Image (cartoon, rainbow, N blue to C red; front, side):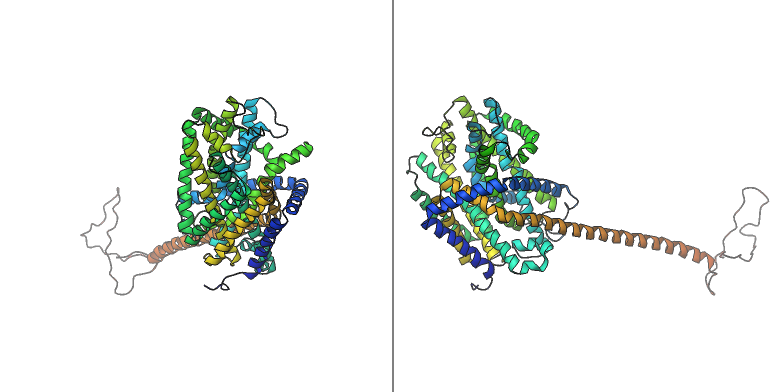
Length: 575
């Protein structure tokens, strides 16, 4: 395949050029990049924080309504299409790709952080703070995140599998924009999607590398440093490139399935070696607390908490909403591609309910174990140097407290992060490459490798520009333009499904009328045929049947059958 055969030049070159310019600026003007990003973060949070909160709340409502709506039985593909992947495989692929690294990175540290440094306005004793910490984490990682993916994935799956459109963000907006998606406006949409995907995936890769580097340091293998982090990015990006070269079904499927098994083993070990009954009880209780307070937590903008509220939102809720939105084109395209044959209801419920359940179990086990350790032995889960939670090492600190679980669990955790890194980079580069090649589901290998390399370079540039804060800032900033695209996708899918449902209703009514007409016609024809047969005299030469006259129960007997009486038949009678 030649390089020019499928390459969408109006998408590939602008997207690649903007990203390369950012990498160069971050590498050669690191301080200036850090200053600009911090300033933009402050301005965006101050001006648009409320918008992110309202938008994500609307997406949750939209996703729940869509799953319960009259559109639920519409198949994402031809009406008789069967799913390409069985349910367990489908789930493992979408979940490992959706937020794998983040779960491992924040599984212990986020609930601990909310406990040690509570959300402004949250007060009470340790038990109340711990409960609020777990529930707030549920908000960040539960329905809200996956509702965003439902919007993007459903609109794309319908366009790709039901309407036969190419794998591209622009086509999900065709019901809204019409033929304009074929021109420069469509190119702009795909460029924004590519940039959002690259930076969103790079944020995850950066978090993963931070955790691997500090995990190696915690095991006294090597001292963490920026040089080590860059080296790890290079090494793991090379592994991702190998996975990319193997193709979707081989590379991503095998890695996703294997990593889900490993994650399940680590989860089970922590549950068994940790305070098992406490973890199970806290999981059940936290579910109730979450559902009792989810509406208030969803719409909370900390408006009356001043700068303290803005700072907290910037580090947590708005960062997460931005991160999930920036991931939406990537996860949306990917889960749309693997969801052929699912109904709308299956897609929505599967994408919402199962990841929510797994995320809550994960945080209840890892976060709950960390909280239990800190509550029973204050200070044991904090960084001795700062007295605060160290997000890079919190998981390894927890492993060290488990009986017999320190070193080998730490190694398993590092392997888990590395494989999640590879699956994220693999899937991300594959999706970006499809977008940059006009929706070609089998883009050329050279461009897949190019995007895998570029994602690694962006992750390295963000780490150079400020580490975790730079990663968070990038996610928040990139999400702003793509959020507009997401709104358009939501409007488009409702418009398209409504039109199809109206057509289905009209077709059902036509079929019902046709069936009724045929039934009435058949009955009338049968009735008329019977009457017509009785009215018509027999044709000449037709067989004449002798019909005995009916005997009356009483009265004088008439002539018997052998009497020889032969009366002429009356009208309508047959002899």
